[in-house]
Image (tube, rainbow, N blue to C red; front, side, top):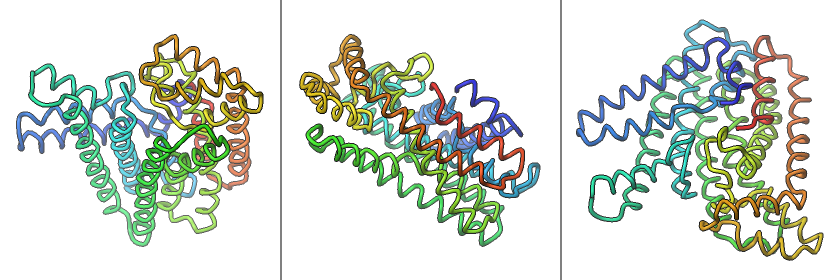
Amino acid sequence: MSPTTQPLVDVEDVRSRIDELLTRHVAQLRTVLAAASDDADVLADAVAQILTGGKRLRAAFCYWSWRAHGGRAGTAEADAVLRVGAALELFQAAALFHDDVMDDSDTRRGFPAAHRAFAALHAQHGLTGDAERFGMSAAILLGDLTLIASEQEFAGALALQPLPRSERARAVFDLMRTEVTVGQYLDVLAQALPWGDDPAADEARAREVIRAKAARYSVEHPIVLGATLADADEGELEACRRLGLPLGEAFQLRDDLLGVFGDPRTTGKPSGDDLREGKRTILAARAVARARAASDEATVELLRTRLGDRSLTDADVITLAAAIRGTGAPDDVERLIDDLAGGAFVLMDERPWDEPARTQLIGLAHAAVDRHA
């Protein structure tokens, strides 16, 4: 977690209380798994590991939006909203388990990705069959387990919330989960489609993936969810959507830059992971577009042939990252982040939010787009 994010999620003990809920869930899961088999506890270990660390931004956006729209700290409703925050964190864990399988990622938060860890477990115990298939199967099931956990936490929270807020909140939560699933498919599709011939179309597709898979679920929906739980009116909810979407896009664009140029010591992922995985990002599309405009066919060919090459060495990654930087595409993405976030901050300044929630939400928004990890 970045040093700028830590104090923000600690105010009113948001992080510690979310962590307590997640720890409680893992303990309950261990009990259930122990009743099933002694061999199943390793699943709880994997869930506990992926829940360790993380920024808790989604939970914090939800909680402070609720406070900004009239929610009061120290009440039973505050406890319910924190459980919604835990549900968001569990849903993110499920998405990460599945995403790492689809991207064939090697690491997650400084540890081997679940499918890699379980493949290693297969080899360590001399099990029969294909180790990689075993690992992928285990990771998919871990994603399913955390999806179930997310639903349990959310349902438990709504049991404390009177209608019609619970119905409205359920609609937001269900829409979020559906959109992320569709966004995951669009991402998989983008990876399989021809790429590099039409950078404008590539960028449009990447923007579509960002909105469905990341932007709404990372920022917009948590903010809307918190406002919904505070019984905000439709005008307030629409304002949350209008500022939440561009902030979410800026958040993901920052992630894309860090995926190529970030420091592994702070990101928890090897340098150039996104290059080896062949992420079809706006950054990559802009790099190709700029290289084409400069008639730099060598760079165009480099990007088209080496992006997504699993055999890239560390030296190859440095070369590819330098080629992207040399096109000026990172500066384009930085400007796009500034434009998106700047417009969102103007909208945030216009909201008549209560303090201290107003300051907290603006601080969280800055942490999301200005981060280094």
